[in-house]
Length: 458
Image 1 (cartoon, rainbow, N blue to C red):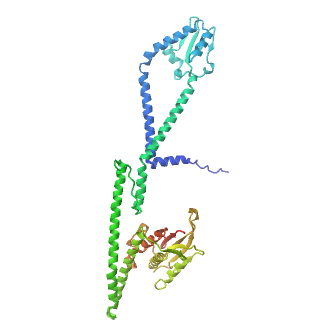
Image 2 (tube, rainbow, N blue to C red; image 1 turned 90 degrees about the vertical axis):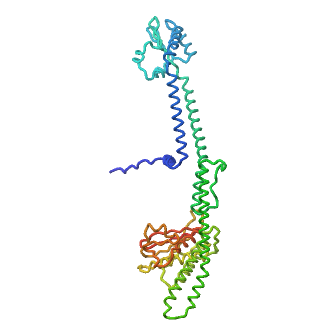
Image 3 (tube, rainbow, N blue to C red; image 1 turned 180 degrees about the horizontal axis):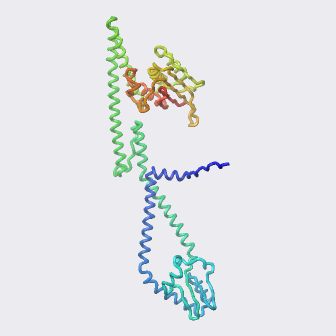
């Protein structure tokens, strides 16, 4: 029986967060660079000072050390006195080891297995090659006295110094991180401002720190504010021009339609008269759609909200379609009442159904509209409603999907001018959904195009 494969151990979450921070956070990279630079500078300084102080140490300190060791050996005497050696050990941070024919004594037997720090990398042969031995003396009676440094009393002090050094290093790192975070705070403000400008919200500019003496980030923020002001001016001028043209076109269109309808009913002119009326109706609808789109994109757009039974509104719109086409309806039961603008929702439903009917002329199945409740309790809101309209036509190329809801956009393949429309229907539907606080999505249902509109609850 084979044992189940063992899953590879997962990396801890802090490891993934650290890698993500190093890859995506400029402030973290700056702090890490600061710490590495500080460590490299400290190591370089210590190495340089050690080399500088070690130059000439043997020539300068060796005679003094040899003279001092001779003095200690003379104080112990010959034959060596244990009492004098113990007195030296109590007075000085040294270890003494006496070996010979009459006396073998060690002041620190527990350190016998632990070589002194100055002898960690040296063997007996190494010391013999460097005669005379600095810390070893022989007495006339044949005893050998070995001196060493008692490092035990220094064990706690270096540990304390190490912890203090680590604490200072961490403190400097925290101060550097706080300082770098404060220095780079304008980057967060610039990012938030760019996102606001991308949504079309130009009311709040990016704050500029120290406007009298701005740094590079302040100059960047001021430049983006100037660009946003220029964009807002161009958009406002375009909107004003479009509104003016649309408004001024209404009167001549109305007069042209009235004059066309007053033409004499002549069989010879009937075809031209009907074609002219259709063109005038298309221009009238275009002007109405342009005005409605500008109203919905205005930040002061007001919706006339009232409690609405969406299922009943869908049934009413389907019944009012010209020619009574077949539309399959899939309505959920017990749909919540939503606060909606009936006129705008009627426009949304009619445009979606007209679009689906135009592209279902050669389809095997009729278009379908479904309405179901959307549970939003997990996000803290009331249940909403999801509207889905689908046709069974040829669909749309995947590259064209992101642009279908743009104004005056029509793909070359399946959405041509001959099928009707000027490219504002889906754009208006998106504006109506967004004005109600909902969402608007397009995707290929294979076959056909599927439009999904989600409306939030009250």
